[in-house]
Length: 347
Image 1: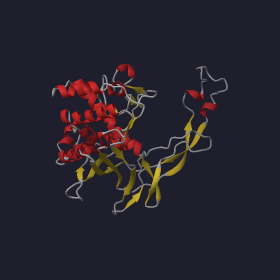
Image 2: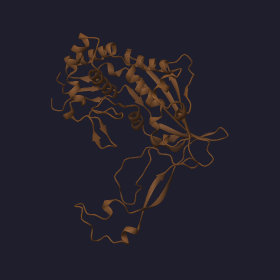
Image 3: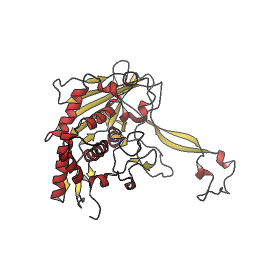
């Protein structure tokens, strides 16, 4: 199947910004504050003493390298006397993946629509739904903020739900949910999964989760909101937090793109995988500064997507599918859920 010059999908999973609240012993909740401070750093890194060609900079002396390097940054920590920190966000699951948002080739559109139908019938939504839900319940979306907590508890208020006020609690996940199977044994797990699979499979399907996390950190322990990416300008702050107004006060956040990235960290189907990475066209991993689905592997999205007609033939011909094909289909469909532009430039 040749990709057309116009092909795109709407997002099927949409996460919001994450706000921070401070829980006080008297029951009050207040927006998390943050401040600006000047840190006196040391001159470090190769640029401080070496030229671009690797030669020692002749102008650098033992005295100049010992001078402080002051810089202004945003800073955030647990307010003294706080009982815990609470985070809140919402995430929706919808059926946008069932057909392209834009497609300039009717035959390609028919192929992709049929591929989703047969994936649903022969493979099913459960594997993807389980992985997305696990990343909500295990607090991956808290990023560094979940690494050094005394305890972290997650709550999910789902819609639609028979009891509109019901919350599915996952208490002290570090202690009680050490493995994947522990999450799946939760009394509400199957019902939450069904909400997601129904949202993906039904026309105009939709479910919304109101998600919260309550975690306890050490006294005055640092908190890590999302940062604004900006060019370094002399005289300006080097680290600025993303923020929003909460009850009329400016408060730091975890940005919606970072939240969505955590939920979408489910790809362990790439060659020689040893950990899940975020769903992306080329299996890019920022920490490793590497892409695990380079086109040379034959496992990038565009190579696999152009095999859609071949996958259709196999799905129609048999109910027993090879594991490699199932994994490739999971990856393709997860990218359609992610949404975005999928055409080949210049075709």
